[in-house]
Image (tube, rainbow over all chains, first blue to last red; front, side, top):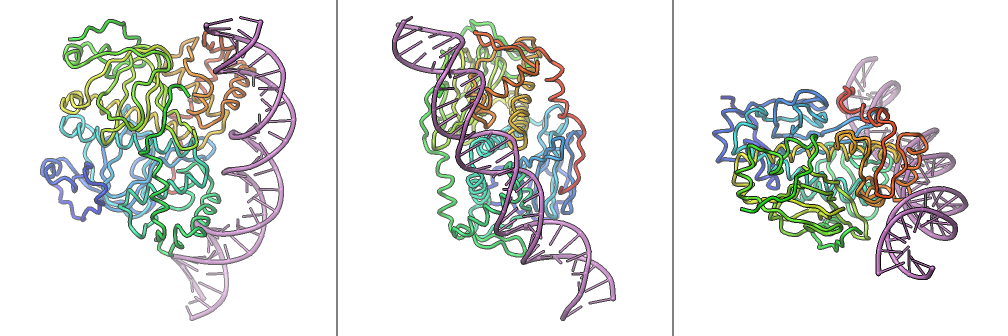
Length: 235
Length: 235
DNA sequence: CGGTTCTTTGACGTGCATCAAATCCTGTGG
DNA sequence: CCACAGGATTTGATGCACGTCAAAGAACCG
């Protein structure tokens, strides 16, 4: 049995996810099949099209999933934080790459084990569904929001996911956010400048910590979700 | 036990999915918990924010999933065809509405049953993962493709999903495709006109049947997927 | 038929991309 | 400690892809 040496830094919002460190009841059983690993900043955990042999749980640090198109175009599919489970694939091949944004530590279980264990399958199903839901929110951003709305909604979602802290550590660069939101780095910079001008956020410190000065604005940005919007049939 | 009166029209490409009519081995067991229903064109199966009590399998017809934003903006998340399983939700509430595009028939099982049955959970997990993968492909379209590329890639994906037929029945309107691809109806119309000019497709018949005249072009449009694209670390 | 809805095409406007240059930050070596 | 190089961010000026507006077909249906 491998010892899990690092403390897992999952937030309360990440509770209920798979990661071994999060689930005391399942801990013993998962430990028997779990291994762990470390990643340096910028290191690649797996690449697009590689064989998908494991499901991962992020324990510390931050990771992004990204996919590429000819012409150097890149889409960042998601940013991952402690407590997040990832590595889902179909046909045994990863559809995206996973790159560490900071020093990170992960635990992993084999995809076979995940398939074989029915109890695990139920938990993975719930996780996969929540990613699907997240992915739908992202489609709304990319398909139907303006640049300003995308950035604000992204920041609001990130803030909520991290338990609404007063300060957010931003492990990614503007270009990563741009590739996540279907924008250019310059546009992301301009929109963050606008949020700063409007008093929603403070300046980004040297160590990438962003102060949230107007939580209500972020709260409001997400208010539209969960509101009962009228939905007539085909219109 | 409810009789399942209609023949399920799932394509071969949809094999391996959940729908009761597709899985002889599971048929008996699923029938015991499955019910079925009919939908008229334009009818709503479930709405955004409603309680998610069932998982559905589409047996005949076409359905779309859509989500709304203030200001009348709409995002079509996916188009569903026979054999597709849908209705996944987190927190017991649907994040989108399901609207029938044509007369349709569905079978359904209760979400509780799906949770309780471990074998079912494994199958649903695989389905959920394939939607997640689909959703990632869609993020690439929305975030990093031009209008022309989005339409071509969408058409290519649709064609592949339906087993590369010579003629595709298009149950949706341009505005639905536009809301799926983050474009305007007029832009979709222009791009389809361009594909027709370039000999990729024929004219759209009165009964919404589109003839594919250049399958190789559609094949090529998807070639970039599955190609081993270089993925350096953070760039 | 005449009304309604959808599609097509054209002309024009705009939001964001692109290009460019200044500034800031960080690590490195003298 | 400072000088310097390389990379990231910020900001401004300009261009273009797609949105917006408008109007003319085309299909449908009572």
